[in-house]
Amino acid sequence: MKILFNCHLPFSLAHGGTQIQIEQTSRALKKLGVEVEPLRWWDDAQRGDILQHFGRMPTYVLELAQSKGMRVVMADLLTAMGSRPMWRIRTQRWVMRVVRKVLPRQMQLALSWESYPLANACTALTGWEAFLIRYLYDVPAERVHVVPNGVEEVFFNSPPAPRGPWLICTATVTPRKRVLETARAAVAADTPLWVVGKPYEPDDPYGQEFTALARAHPKQIRYEGSLNQREQVAAAYRSARGFVLLSTMESLSLSALEAAACECPLLLGDLPWARSAFGAQASYCSTSASTNATAAVLRRFYDAAPNLPPPPRPMTWDDVARAYLEVYQKILK
Image (cartoon, rainbow, N blue to C red; front, top):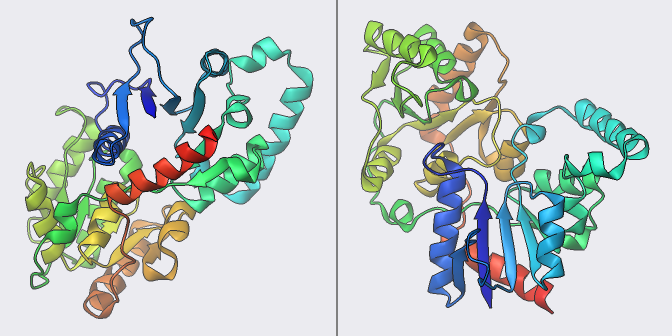
């Protein structure tokens, strides 16, 4: 069995969850004896049994792969779509059905909607995204598989430590993650918050505004940039009073999974991905609440955190590789 991985997002331009997902899945599959290599667009002699595309695969490329005898697995992240309320999902489904009836197929190909039902398998990180694939793109249930992200062993193996006074937020300092808004709420609630991460660019206005806030309130906001060693990140989760991530859009947060592996209580944005992944074993806050309303939730979570049960144990990347191997074996039969 030979698997070819493909992704249209260059790692050098946008480091993040997709890169981690691809690299860790590839590494774990190789440990199981599966041959995995990136799709080489310049190599007309390259062959494989399965082409796995991370993202929405162009329909014509998918059809070309299948015409060469390859099975296709599409692993798309429905980050924005999965964060919408249900009424907008229903509206989107109605609009998509109208578009399918009125637009010529050549124009529809540019949207790549047909890639979902044409793929031999679609994978989703959560049950919510699996539902969206079935509901919006009419993919048969037997072709949709939930394969969450995994967590590196260093987080499971990190030694327990006394919980300190700081809540922790590990995220890129960008508007989608709402790091600045969370920090403002922490100041208003007089709740210590340790932010680990950095902006995409040093001169980003949002990042500069957050940095200025952190400098002005060192008692409430701890900020030293990123932690470069994974052992350091694991130790930070182990010593944190709780983990906070109030982003407006997520697919399945790797940071939240890492914190869960370190048995750190979670306060997450009240969105379907979080409810689907953690259910009643996490605390939630509206992602559109005012600073004062968020501050009140933050304070309640801070006071309750020492007595909260740990979140559910996430999968390791080895578990993820085994789950993908089952998908591969199924579609090759």
